[in-house]
Image (cartoon, rainbow, N blue to C red; front, side, top):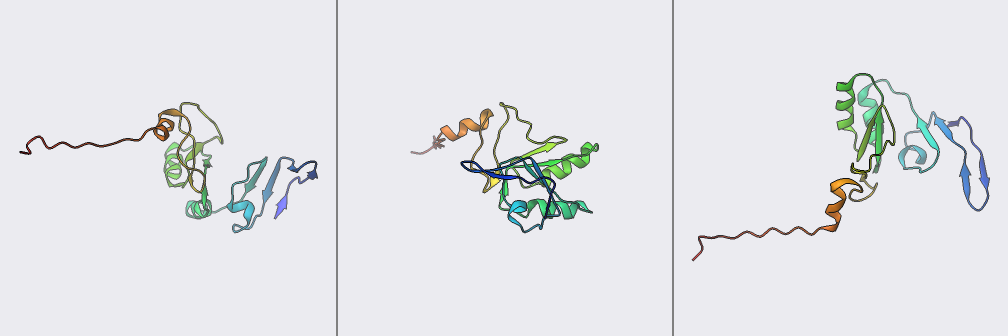
Length: 133
């Protein structure tokens, strides 16, 4: 694993400067887990099948991204990602009226939009047979 810039400072915790990791083993922690910090893992691939296998081979699925000028390819790939959100030509673009949340071990439910209200409801179905005597 190579890091473009890596500085770790111990000042009441651990901090890392914005860092891009390249040549990361696909089974390594930094590749497979969610890292909430100014870091990114960059991995090259040859086929869509290869990148989808690498992307979906994780227990997490908060957000994915695809960058292309081909909107049909973008939508096809976006639908194959196992993630709660997918950015096309962007990462982490948020809209407060759109659902926010992941799949797998990346959270439960959704925040934002009408989908968030479902967490506060307890729907009930009542069926009545009006022909019963």
